[in-house]
Image (cartoon, rainbow, N blue to C red; front, side):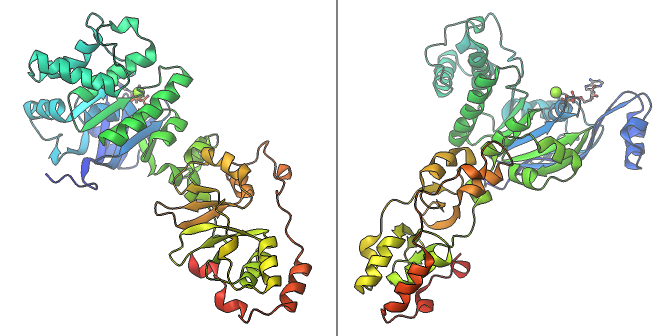
Length: 438
Ligand SMILES: Nc1ncnc2c1ncn2[C@@H]1O[C@H](COP(=O)(O)OP(=O)(O)O)[C@@H](O)[C@H]1O
Ligand SMILES: [Mg+2]
């Protein structure tokens, strides 16, 4: 099996789980359009679910209690047999294989983290973590070494000899995660794994999971009823309602383009600052000049953008710094041709994938709209403060509080200077047209 990034590890197609009697009749009725609550004496927990989980992603299944999330994950780990449809795990349709094969897949390819930790109370922490290795028949000394290694990874160095009851809830769940990691399976199933934890600990665990994932590149199916958690963790999210998947998309997709009123209602109180990134809200930069431009061009660009300063980029769009109108003005008056001497290396930059929460301080400190750069330091956009505030929806941060640290030189003055001086260069030839450049 190739281990490329887009490899699909889990694929569900038209998957159903109906509890009760004559379940296959119920599936036929559902397929024919009978609504879920029009079925007698059965519960349709999962209805016609189709999705793919790719290697290395965190795929979140999100929905209210009773929407079918746990049933879905239990079909994936083989605890529930599907009523209809297919479920493929690493090229094997597990609805069609023998129990023995299924056990083999579960043991070698899937680990589960439970909401209530499910640790063995009379075993030490290290023995809990080593337990799946014991099942795999790994020798004692090797098990302990491996378990201790993983305890280090989840931040529990030195806690191995304690009993689970001596640990806080957050720490116990780290043991749960360590145990799931010990078996070294590629698929990690987490059903409401953080839901029993206090909010602050929960946030910490979410962050730790993201950190771990950056190192380990597991394929994680994470179930939650908490939209903020889903948005924070998920590379993609499947939203479930009454047994059906109503939308699958990235957190940004779901936030900015909800598939229906239900999803829209759901996302209304999401913490946008933790979900949206700089690249989601950035705008095309207008106050931008090329480092080869003359001071007149720079000044004209600033005037056209109603800005007191501009970003300066080189031919490769690498951000060099900023230029202020008063400096450009001086150069024009002196008849200088180059702006290189007055470029300030004070640009406030953020990365395209920074979340909005991390942009507030830069936005306050920046004299210009914050510059957004890609991994190669190239300018890809800007975020004016008002855009940042607007992206977060109406709130206490009213735009009236914004004060500009620099007052632009009045444009009538600029026009006068531009008319009086001659640096021999027509503006247009040197103006960086932002629409073309970006
Ligand atoms: N073993 C079961 N027998 C009968 N009904 C079940 C069983 N497990 C779950 N259900 C029902 O299936 C629906 C979905 O449940 P579940 O998958 O646990 O939802 P979630 O995890 O989203 O809260 C619910 O109506 C629940 O009562
Ligand atoms: Mg559940």
